[in-house]
Amino acid sequence: METVLRFEAERDDPGSEFMAKARARDAEKKRALDAARARLTAVRYGPGVIDACARVADAFDLVGHRGDLVLGRAARALAAIEGAPMADAGHVARVAKLVLVHRRGRGESGTLPPWTADDDARVARTLPNAEG
Image 1: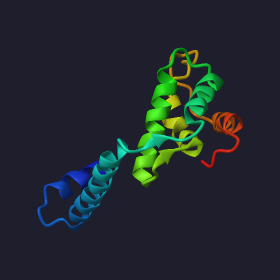
Image 2 (image 1 turned 120 degrees about the vertical axis):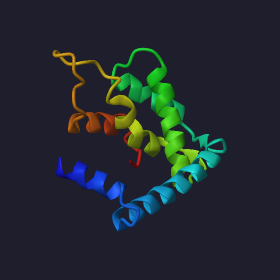
Image 3 (image 1 turned 180 degrees about the vertical axis):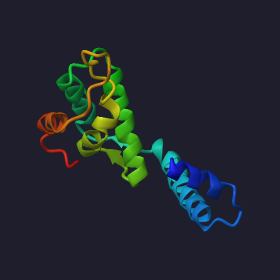
């Protein structure tokens, strides 16, 4: 609660050094993301990336192809952020948690099961040569 109250007080203070630094970091991140967005159309799938996406989706027993598609798109987006010309299996491995955490089945209580070290290991076993 204290953090929220401090933020609210700082946000309304035009001379806040805290907010000036935060806005500068936000602007820097926005420039980087805008540049990545501009590069995205040039980023290609590297050799074996589509297959890697399908294997990871299969390892998590996903139904349909949405998981494969989103894994590929997220891998390309990460490659663009990093300035890489093509997405590789390492990009797929690094986005797997973000893409898959909510695509796995629900637990007994209807809640999403947490992502665990076993899930990380499953990705690593599926993509053994990926640098993630």
